[in-house]
Image (cartoon, rainbow, N blue to C red; front, side):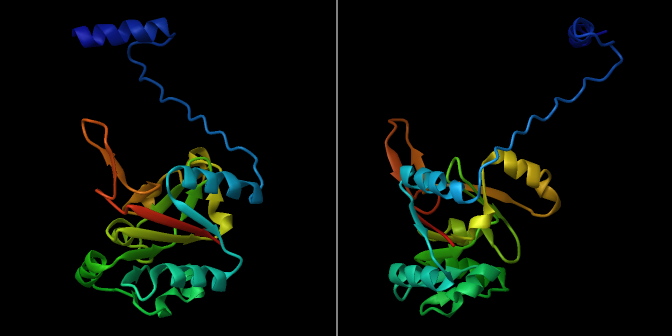
Length: 210
C-alpha cells in the first residue's frame, strides 16, 4: 500500500466508508429562485450598466431594428443567422453582412467589421451575462472579433442565474462545441492593475431585450 492509498483509506474510514469503496461524487446543490420574468429585466440591466455596458428594452422588433440603425449607421457590420435577427430585419440593413456559409468569408468579414450583431441562447439576470452556444445560427467570432457587440434577446430567455442555466442545460457539450459567457465589455489589467477594455474582445457591448 502506497502512502497515498494509506491516506485515502484513513479518510474513507473516518467518513464511514471502506477502502475498496469508491468515493461518492458530491451532490449537486442547484437552487433556482422563483422570480417572475418581468422582475428579471431590471437587475439584468443594472448588472450590465454596472459593467459599463448599455442596455435597452425594445417595445417591438421594429423598435430594436431602429436602435441598431441609429447605432451602426451604414456599418460595416456582420450579423449572425439567428431567426430572431431575421424577424427584426437586421440582415436587410445597409452595411450589414449576414448569411455566411463559408468559414473563411465569415472570418474576413468579422475582422473588418465595426459591429457584430447576434442573439444569445440565454441571459443571466444576476450578473448581466450573455450565454452564447456556438451553432450554425450563432458563430462564435461574430460576438468576439468586432470591437462592438450588439446582442438582441427575447425576455423569455432571461434566467435568474447560473443555477437555472445548469438546471436547463446540464450537459451543454451534447448540443454545442462551445458555451461562452459574456459579462460586459472585454477587459484586462496588467501587473500594475491598469484596466483596459477591448484587448481580448469587444470593448463596447449593447444588449437589447425584446
